[in-house]
Length: 123
Image 1 (tube, rainbow, N blue to C red):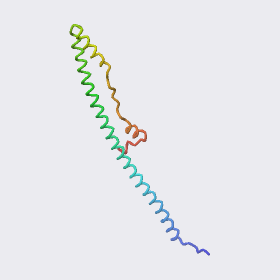
Image 2: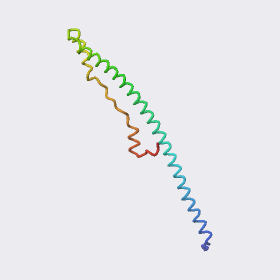
Image 3: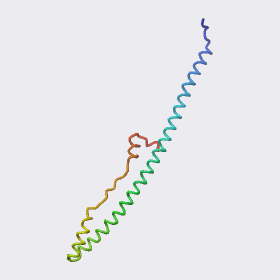
Image 4: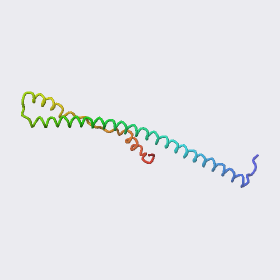
């Protein structure tokens, strides 16, 4: 046997259901916010590491460029002199390095990952 519910009981059930759904929504938003913050920290750490690696590569490239400039300068000085046997050996030695370059490649892995997932707002 069931008793007839009063309006107050319906209202109480509605508010309890509303409160449960609302609190579930709030909990999900808090969880998403926490996950996004963690992801932002991971991206920031990874981006700093990529920049440090790029800086090291760039410093190596600068040193290579300085050597290349010195070799080119020596070649220019040799080209102004008369070509003799001793100079041809030097000239031959220096010309080996004409095409000696180290290509510079930037590490864009983290940036591409951020772009892929459209997480610009996280940073």
